[in-house]
Image 1 (cartoon, helix red, strand yellow):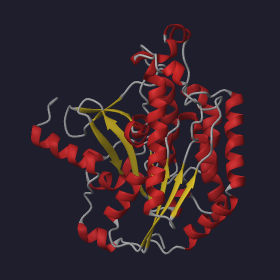
Image 2 (tube, one colour):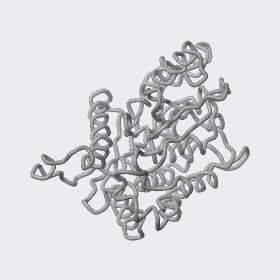
Image 3 (cartoon, helix red, strand yellow):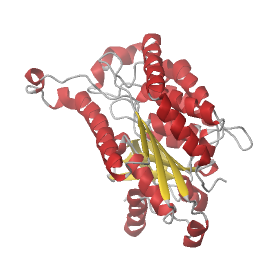
Length: 356
């Protein structure tokens, strides 16, 4: 077990899979708000600019930062980067980033994150046999934005999804655990890197366990929770079991509309299915969770999602033309859902919560 005892690794797995909280029951009871405000942000690579702009609109309407508006913030992949970026200051005493700053980050740094050398461009044919991108670009950007901040520094409760590849279990980075256990407190930049390690795009992230020489091998949480809204709701119900209301705001990165023609797909083998299957998993998971939350919380669930064309569905198209198109989709979504955005913004600032 790579240096961990079987019992210890089993306990770690249980915590990772269930999201079990290490907060004392008395503390949970004392912190129960009447309304728990939950933010969930989907994965989607460069398309994270869409939820960033939606959040910028909510911040403008409320006059408050994201971390002040929500009691639980969950994110997967690019949504995990946003969730951390809007709740964890770069250093103690520094102001939190605004959503508009992260929208600018996608526009300014997208091509550095998704950059390839000439050699890699020539020899990574559609990323079928080798990871498409070096990790250097994304790690440099994350280091610049997060510095030496840690998960425990989050200004509100944060849940970030990832998947442990070698031991095969979902892994949840939780700020509530990070504040109680040093072995669950990781650098924010490493958490952001782990949740966004999309298979075939970036190498898995190796993170020390914090207790000895062993490590976790983590990939993008989108393989099981590209839309982490259900995970966030479970976390909120676990940490605030006596709340009267759970208000969920879920932000998508665009729903895929590109078709997979039967006359082509019926002849595909394993290699040809790799990228379409990854897209189908990410999009299918997001849509399924959306359906589930609509049934569970018909009056307390807001979903802000747009539709992608065949030209801007890529996770890694950071070209100026695509960035402009994605910003246009975000603007159209904000305009179309202006009434809902105004309503949820009012609810966020008027609902009695633990931040009062």
